[in-house]
Length: 230
Image 1 (cartoon, rainbow, N blue to C red):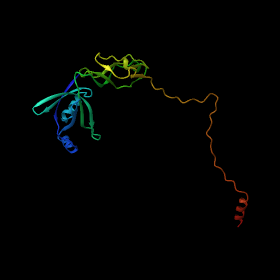
Image 2: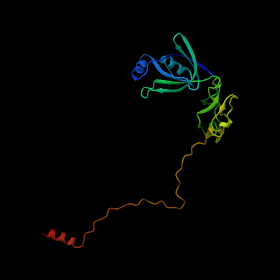
Image 3: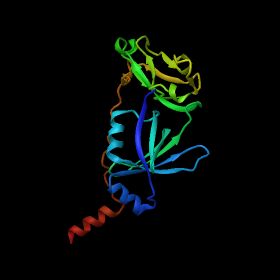
Image 4: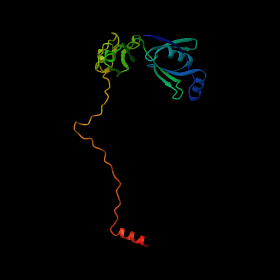
């Protein structure tokens, strides 16, 4: 399991105005949460954080936070709990970390990594459909894999891969339903052909509604003629 090192500083700034000012100074506010510990407010260099996210897959990775506390430094092994983004600009505005024990099993989600091209796609015209993009696992932090690799090259049309069929390291346990489908090779979509008229059946022409002629009321015609004579 890849370990990422990140230097952070304790943070005294709280409240919207002070935190916004902190962001303007090039820092991202964050909080470390630990079991049976008080939450610790910290600040991270935004430029360092952006570089870190671009170079690593930080979700599910162990991040060792070096906290500068006066003259000493303490290192805390953490997982990212939440990243908050600005809804308009998309930049990171806050982060939460969960401190973990390296000797205690934890539950995390890891991505599904597909290897190869399925027979059912390449030769039979089917399509690969992902049902589960991530799998929940339980293991020691040091044993967290980057992802669960699945070789799909042997899959034919209509075949699927289930949780119970995954090949996992002996130290890793899948927590999803064993019968859950991870991915499947779906049949190609069939075009609907309009039904032809039955043999011998005459095609009905659309009914044309003709304009209805006005029928003069009895006695009305005579009155009109008298009017002309005048």
